[in-house]
Image (tube, rainbow, N blue to C red):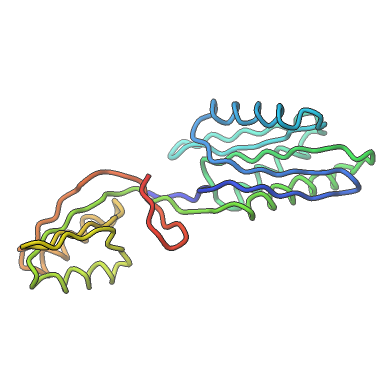
Length: 214
């Protein structure tokens, strides 16, 4: 299992007919966490007219919520939610704060403004794909090292650690879906000489070229 989410939230801002829209993105895993962040945003921008938001939380059973916070129905929270859906993101909260500029934007104008500000916030964020899997330990003698490195490279798996002693132990992050096939390939390539074991279950992602374990 894997899903796209936010590693580091960002902030984007647009101005439409003197109204200021500030879009902020957060990584969240519970509804309580999302509610707390919205509350903090309201305190931070206490003098703003509206704080509209949407979130998508969960794995197999996804929870989606949104709020127009006083804007005409369907003009704020739903467009923000559609931006999150469009990026196929989960465990993400987007809050758009509006400072009213004195000119009414109309339904279409509001939808565009909230869509663009949510989009700007996401574009300023660092997005990742989280993968469910294992940190695997693979032990071999030196004669089997080249074969292991080749197999891992063929699957695009990075070695995150290596211990070179009398034998070699490689540590690699492997998705749950790949584990069985990788074990079979290693057994075949090394005539059953390599020892493969799970070190721990984890979620992991590639962040700017480096592997991060969660």
